[in-house]
Image 1 (cartoon, rainbow, N blue to C red):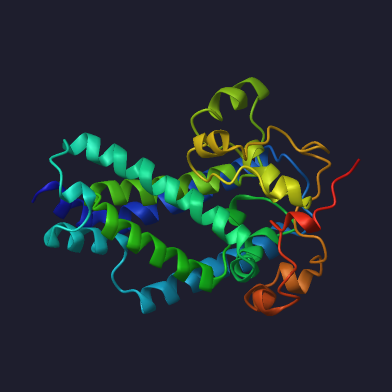
Image 2 (cartoon, rainbow, N blue to C red; image 1 turned 90 degrees about the vertical axis):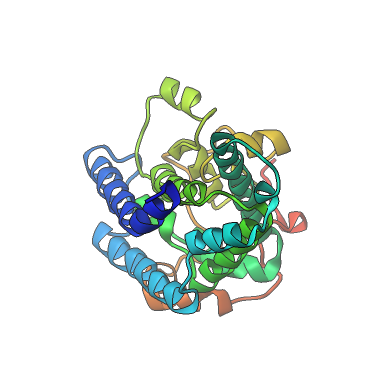
Length: 285
C-alpha cells in the first residue's frame, strides 16, 4: 500500500479524530478558562451549532459523494493540475499545495463578504451572538456546498498530492476550532503565534459587530494574507471583553441561535444590507 492509498483509507477516521479531539480540547479549555461570558447558554449553543454541522455533513455527502480527497485522486489519475505537469519534489509539492489552498480559502472568505448574495449565506456564521469553538464550524448548508465546489475546482487546477489535501483539511478544521475558541492566550505568546497561525484574539476581531472590524482578519489558518493585503487589524477598539459579537439588526435568539432560524437567515432582510459595502459603514469619530 503506497502513501496515497494509506491516506485515502484512513482519511475519514483521521479527520473525524482530529475534529472531535480539537472540539473536546478547546471546549474543555473554554470551561476552565473562558475569555468572555456567553450571552446564550452553552447547552443551546452546542446543540444548535453542532446540529447544523451534522446536518451539513449529511447533505454534503448526499450531494457530493466524492469528497475533496477523491477529487484529488481522480485529478492525479487524469494528470490534471499544475503540480501534476511539473516534476516537483513530493515534499515541496505538498507545501505548495497547502499554502495555495489556504490562499484560495482566504480569497473565498473575502468574496463571501464582498458579494451581497454570498454575504446572505455567510452571515449565518457571523450572526452568532457569541464566539466559541462551535462558531468555527457554524456555516449555512448552501455556503458549505459552495465551498466544496470552490475546493474541487482548486484541486482540479492545482493538482495537489492526495496527502496534501488530507493535511490541509485536517489543519483547516483544527485551526478553525482553535481560533474560534473562547479562550485566552498570554499576550506575549499571542503576539508570537499570530505570525504563524491565526489566534483566537486575532480572529475574534473579525466577528465584531462593527463593520470595519468585521472586514479584517479574514484568515482561518495562515495569518500572512491579511498582513500582505492590508486587511490585518491587531485589536478591536472596545477590547476583547467589551466588544460586541454578531451583526447589527440580527439579535433575536430564535433567529440567530436556533437551528431553524439559522437555516432561514439567508432569506431574511434586504439584499443591500451587506457588510463590505463601505458606503454603509458608520465609523466612530
